[in-house]
Image 1 (cartoon, one colour):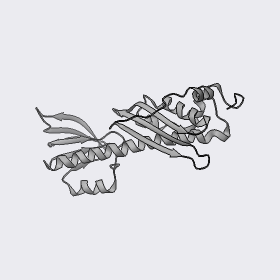
Image 2: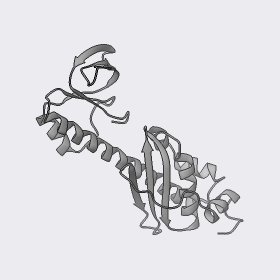
Image 3: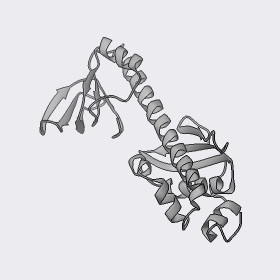
Image 4: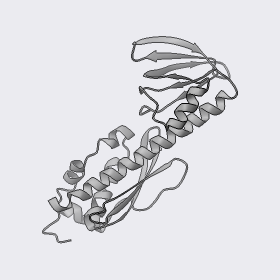
Length: 213
């Protein structure tokens, strides 16, 4: 890397990359992407808590620009919510690095794609765990409810089929306002966003999915 071709920020992140490494645990999701043209490969690891990326690491097998862009995007994503992190673009990365040579812009694309892959895998895994919990509860009581702000559940067709075959009630485009009960869930207050109405439900268990579901 020649200093005449790259900004000081690019050189800094290449020589001293931030957040290098891996993460482990049940709350960690991994995203891997590669570019067959240049041979670059990136792996991103994110740890999410309360819908916020609290930790992020990366490994990359590629050129100096790949290292620099991956390093920068981890800095941009850390502390952001899932939705905020998904809005990070290759232009954001390049701008934060004070520019990249046109021939190296694909590296910022690769970094953004790797982050999105990790977030996508986090969503799928979280949705799967929530559905499995609901299905387990439904074996004990028929009064189990899913509450999601989304129009549809972001889960596999197989899990959707299992939900349909169960007694689980899915409340789409809805917000959980209140849970009532002394030692267990007995009643909930729901806001229907589509109809802009509030109503009460009597039930035994409620599963609240994150905003992206």
